[in-house]
Length: 177
Image 1 (cartoon, rainbow, N blue to C red):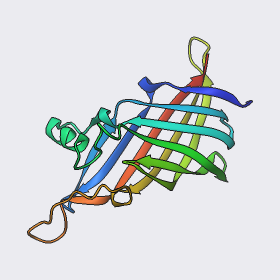
Image 2: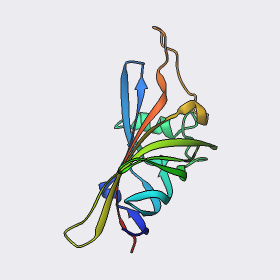
Image 3: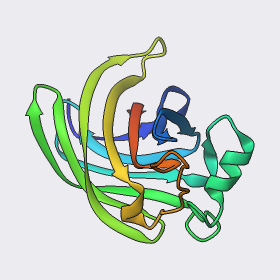
């Protein structure tokens, strides 16, 4: 496959996260609005150009009060910092169809280098003849690295909200028209 411009098919893609709650359980959520600019040969991502943006106002943890709190100044402060962005700076092939993608993550006014494990899931044509590709990526961020330090101590020890946020991304994309 040649290097092409790819557009994310948001209706067949997902950006999900989980974080420890009360040190005993996990709260999961998703972001409904995101986009990416991908210029790549999907079967060899080492020379790909990847820019990814998540609209933080689209956070959904299936609890309206919690979602509003996440958008507030205690967390994302979405009126001032409406997006999380990622720009790949290095892509290293680690196995057949497997990659380590490092890039600059900007969140809450802070930019840091982060790495994600990514997989090329395959390519094919849909019933209408459109070329499609699939990718998966996983990684984690520390909230405190981005100034997201809101928390509460628990009576039994520990804290209400974990520092590590696990991220899972599933992307289906098609060649840009």
